[in-house]
Length: 376
Ligand SMILES: *Cc1c(COP(=O)(O)O)cnc(C)c1O
Image 1 (cartoon, protein in one colour):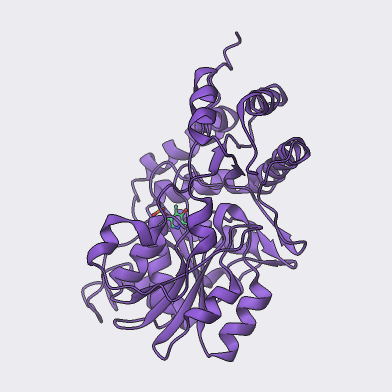
Image 2: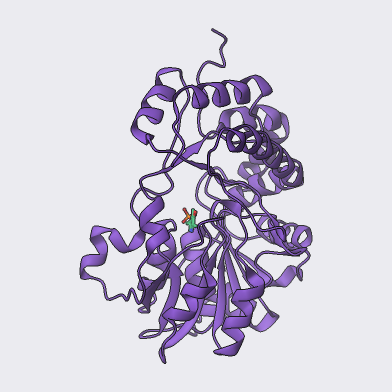
């Protein structure tokens, strides 16, 4: 067996290997400089990220992580205590935390069977007099149907907040995610498509005034060096993480293309064998943060693949509405979450990362097809 015997879900070590010289020098530079908080590296990353996405540089604000980024986006959109926020139950728990920690009330919508993104019809059924915003989670890197969501939200004067934690560089109908809503949050958790070497995130807002507010909010609500205008928080992005992200950013477009090529390879092999995989809309440029396929025998698939060194995951085994934490938190489920509850025992995630080799892809496919049974 080759040294590639073990195929992880994400291989951060392989990525570091491709960047080592530049990355080590960049990190050493920050340590020499000793400006660890805020400063030029943060501003430079914010401007570079904004540039790649086609934003105004001032409207991207680096922050501590993706959870705070989504919470800050809700805050920028004007969501407050007692407001209802519609979100998919099928998402990472952090999306929900951002809502509840704001004092807002989560209202769970179902997802579409085709691509697992929030179902606009279900969203329409969730709207009440108290609804303030809808969170479009571009789950697995697949953009939501922003055309229909925008129509529904416009009709009811609701704000859209985008959770882009899994969707760096994704676009809908040629327009980048995070530019549709009132505000958006990105995560740069190490395993995300663009990952720091620790926790990091960014909030994207619409104008300079909002950006100034968010910039102050993440820095103790400062209005001067010693003056604080509001009781806020410390949710800053640090210079070291900003520098790591700046080194990686020029590679992101290439990495994304590679993810798409791997997904296309998997799709062709799995679909022809009768398996249901993510089916993005024709208008979607999906970036495959996670590669999901539905199986009828998940336990066996995970066990058999583990036995041949192939890691798998489940994103996510417990939807938000079924979490124990929800038992004591106010929330609403206006319509049955049929698709959400249906897929939860079938979905399995397979290794996908830019450094995956052809040989590794072949091994994933052949071993998967050897053991997996399609859903009838
Ligand atoms: C990762 C993630 C978050 C939270 O990001 P952190 O940086 O881990 O706080 C939020 N929403 C989704 C959909 C995520 O995948």
